[in-house]
Length: 80
Image 1 (cartoon, rainbow, N blue to C red):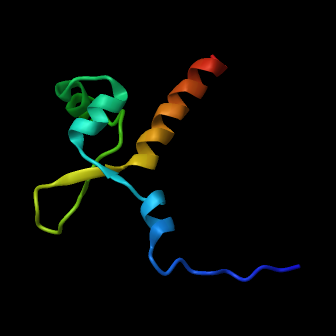
Image 2 (image 1 turned 60 degrees about the vertical axis):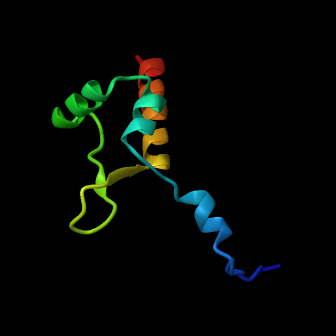
């Protein structure tokens, strides 16, 4: 039996899947200092943030991308 796609009219599914986190939250998730995060970004060891508002200064990361980075690091250490 084929199920039809039912869009979520309230957008609840989308809200759960897309969460933007800011610099401070990324530092807390990675357990690193703000300076270390800036250093990792400069050395291309971590994802560059994206601008939240065109022309604005506020930046953020998708939480799922940060989580993926953490899991990738864990898997890399287990493989070594």
